[in-house]
Length: 64
Image 1: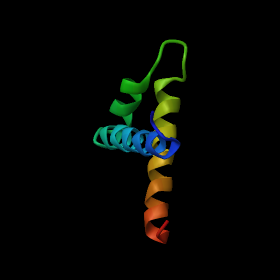
Image 2: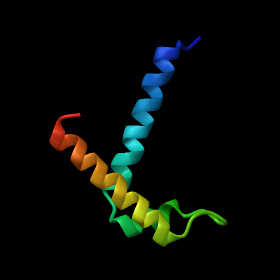
Image 3: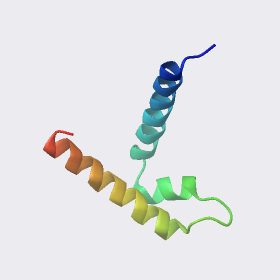
Image 4: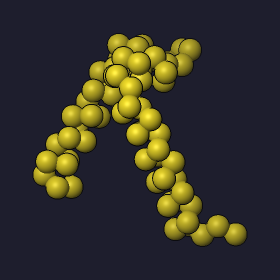
């Protein structure tokens, strides 16, 4: 049986890989790849992705 810690570690690896794939694309291409029928628009997704990237850069700059 998987422990909680193992499950969290595995989830962290999956999230890190997904973000690395997203960050390898332009914000527009990443938004198009993430777009789901009935979901947020490509424009909204692009804005969210850009915001996430800015937050990540700020976190690196302050050492979080």
